[in-house]
Length: 335
Ligand code: IMP
Ligand code: MG
Image (cartoon, rainbow, N blue to C red; front, side, top):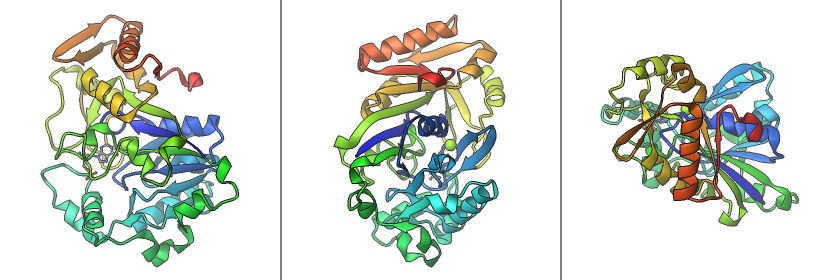
């Protein structure tokens, strides 16, 4: 068994969907597994030039790969079934490719009603927090208990181990949200209710020894959606928001923007054990021709794209590990 993990190093919305999609095209995965979160996530994927936004469903479906919503996830049944229908309408046989781990948990309508009352965190109001709360309070409902999901339910243990193909299983784990939203490592309480780090993938039934690559995905600037103050003072962020279409793909809320914070990035790289790092949205900063980042309290301004690329690669290799491969969007062929 072999597994690669795609994990977000910032606050979600860094383009994990795009990297996962590119990896599915290149590698021979037998399974794509979403390992945390629910329909609070919104993954934007361009498949053959067409735009798709998925919430629950892993991107393996676009390549005919068996796609599993893992035990670490929470599922809202209507949203899930609607997503299957939408994909089918576009000619993607999602109902034959998508499966749900029997021990994943459900988001009920009651969870949603409760989440709608949130004012403190700025949640996506999708019932995520209440569903995880009930799971850990041992009064949640597991996916196998819902009659509408029967045809999708699988037992993860049998799927991964009691299977003739066991030796040949190659998994792509697709994370949701990001390091800064992780329940333990994010800026609590402005976090989501699941574990967003690479370690979380392993909780879905795969041993640490199976892991090959950990793809950390970041943006060349940072964005965050939620109730805390995050946006920096620079006027340019308004332009970046428009050019970069920085509005939540689930809720449409404007994302707050700031320059990349190297300390957070370094911490996320270390804790996730990322050995490949991709910085997305280089084209947006290229369009405004402004290359800045924070290193500690200092704001650095770079003259060119090449300067910031060299600085980031060098610093990650010196301060974290010389084995880290650093890529920038535009380097798609290198993925
Ligand atoms: P919840 O996950 O809906 O409870 O929201 C908790 C926090 O995580 C809020 O700040 C949300 O905006 C943020 N969040 C949840 N899912 C995503 C996502 O997929 N992308 C970006 N932010 C997210
Ligand atoms: Mg997203």
